[in-house]
Image (cartoon, rainbow, N blue to C red; front, side, top):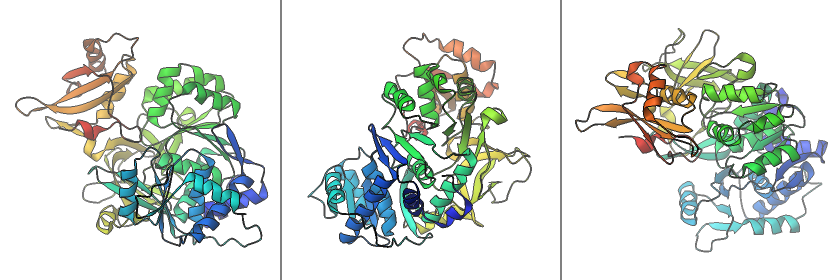
Amino acid sequence: MASNICDTKKTVVQRILEHALAAPDDVAIIAKDKQTSYCALKDMILSIHKWLLAQGIRQGDCVAVQALHEDICIACFYAVHLTGAILVPLERSAPFEKIQSIAVEIGAVLIISLQKESASAIQWVDYETIRLAVSETAAPVADPIVYPDIDMPCEMIFTTGTTGKSKGVLMTHRSISWYAYSICKCVEMKPGNRFFITTPLNHAGGLRRTHLSLANGCCVVYMDGMGNLARYFRYIREYAVTSLYLPPVALRILLLRTGDKLSEFRDQIDFVYSSSSALPAGDCEKLAQLLPKTRLYNAYEASETPGVSAYDYNTDGIRKDCVGKANVGVELAIMDDEGRIILNGENEGKICVRSRMNMKEYYQEPELTSSVWKNEWFVSNDLGYMDEQGRVYYRGRLGDVINIGGYKIAPTDVEETALLSGLVDECICVECRDGSEIPFLKLIVVVGKEKTFDPEILRTFLADRLEGYKIPQEIVAADKISKTFNGKLDRKAYRV
């Protein structure tokens, strides 16, 4: 069932449970070849909620949950929401020491994980204990459900910024409910949509697409990563997937390793949603060729401010670096270094956002929180500009711009042009220094095993398309390129 404006006054967990009453047999989750109905999900949420209350979990407590692509984990997420506690999803592969460290840092009162650890001073339970509690605890059918206040904080996602210091981004029930409404409108989500998600659920991409699907009565299909592409396409086919979440790195994997395989689903896929950074124009063109009838969205959002903007480049045309116009509930602007809003188009500055979906704060970081707000605007470290029609163009992170001889270079300009050559599969443009500490550009490339590589051919290709100061002095091949936890190029790893 599609969302409507009044839904934004309800928490996501309330919207899920109400849909379960209205359409109990609808499929909510498909994971590990198991289908879970809304009725079954509701019963799990209510049983786990009852168990959490019996453990003494109360409003405002932090509960750390190791994130799995399984129905029991999703039920834990929303059961924590229902108690009024704060969900802190953690990486599936995180070792005991890391989980313990984060839990201590945030003052967690409970940890739900793959394994039970007796060495911890914090209460620690495993998923088997949770499953047993679900099987033994009857969901309270007749009891009235008391939902948390919509302006209460409900979840915290950890992210790293330019400093590399981990920050806890605290969101409220209202912000994620508004997100589920706004993006539903943006992508024209239809009843019965099946959204395929392979990204980790402790990161914003996977978690918020889950909220989007379940708050609107649709189905989410999970697979843990894209290591098995044969299974990926089997899931699309067997489970009638209608939409894909493909961050830039995931899209590039599909285009490189599977050729035209996606075109087999050109009559099935309703929309594809990409976010986290602007897509290379060449990847947009290729995907549009493979899925000519599909709405293809390139979006801008951040952990602190989800659902900011998007546009369908299969309908509106491919515009380099474009991430669209502001979504419902969002205002967008570009701000200069003095904190003034830039009015004339195409002058670059920091992208700033005034939104119903903005974060509440960085957890227990009042000074850091204060530093990113100016006159109710969230001021990002992302650089961009806005055209006369209100479309925003993403030009990269503030700390990523490279200064060579007074020329400011966006490394993405070099990287996207190199990818257009077809000579390399991946690349990253970085700043290096010679023996006299003079900076120069270096392009590190990954070449497919079936390809022969001549750096001079690539240099000539770049020279025909880029200004002279953007041509890398060095072009070298490598086996791989460092990535961040969410698949982005790890530029900090290459900084001099």
